[in-house]
Length: 130
Image 1 (cartoon, rainbow, N blue to C red):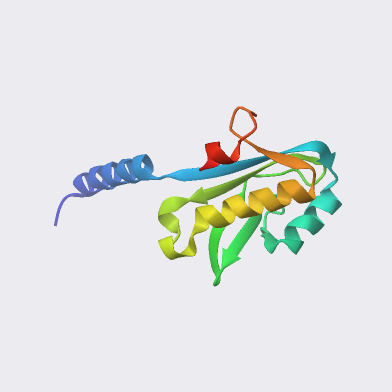
Image 2: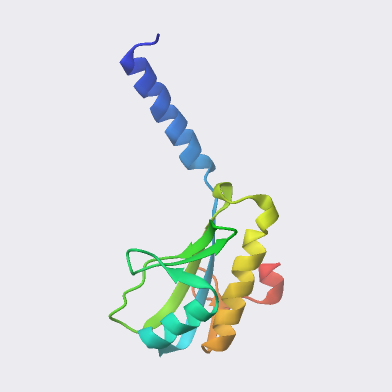
């Protein structure tokens, strides 16, 4: 049996490797007018999202498994931007998670007068997304 120090070193190396290979994709929706929390909450629930236990994130499930979620939001303030996050290694490929997350982003943007933007706030064209 290896020593505790050797096992801890191996565990740290494995953790670092896993962190480096973790791929996270995001979709940003910037709202042209801030969306009051109550309206935003209703929209997200209509789209099939569930409010997380923290009350600050929305989660999207398929077949009982978490597919993607939002970043933290402040329920005491109107929503000006929504970011949806997908942890690629955690979702089965057959879920088509990115396509589904993108479609939800588009639908939410259309319903709440928003637009898809990159991380710098620049509008995303269909070609850029492809």
